[in-house]
Image 1 (cartoon, rainbow, N blue to C red):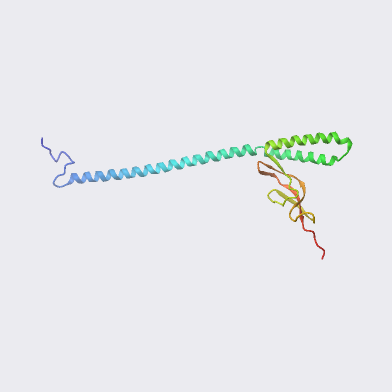
Image 2 (tube, rainbow, N blue to C red):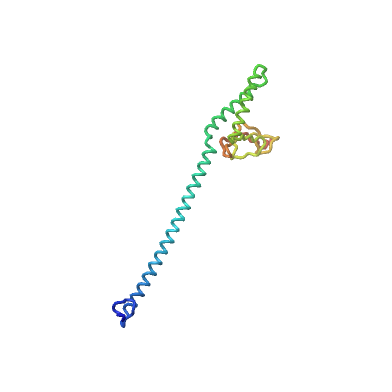
Length: 184
């Protein structure tokens, strides 16, 4: 059997045309392969970015749900704080009147129940008497000269503050001590 170079393009001829065609085919295939690899790399990068973004959205949603659970009672807690304040004022103003003894004891029992509910809900009272003034948790109502208290410390608490799971609900309203004024 004789092979006719004109019938098989892979066999080079005297003018060299089929060999050049096979070289250009190999170059074209290499270029296509390189382009396909670039597309694959880009697709993998896009997939990884999409996965990372999806994870970020999932984590953010989880944090939002946790925060909603932790702070869902915030408005209700603010209303209950006013009730607690009223109970404390009532107990304080009743004094030692003998006719009010049973009434005051009932108010104290109610106050204990409110305090237990606050504890279960993560509501903590801020009572900074004698502590250094902290503007993050205290609201200064006024300052007064005092020789008994250190300057900048809380010498009286007008109204207790409260936090809910570490977040401030209401700042404690306080009177701050300042050095006594000296006569000239």
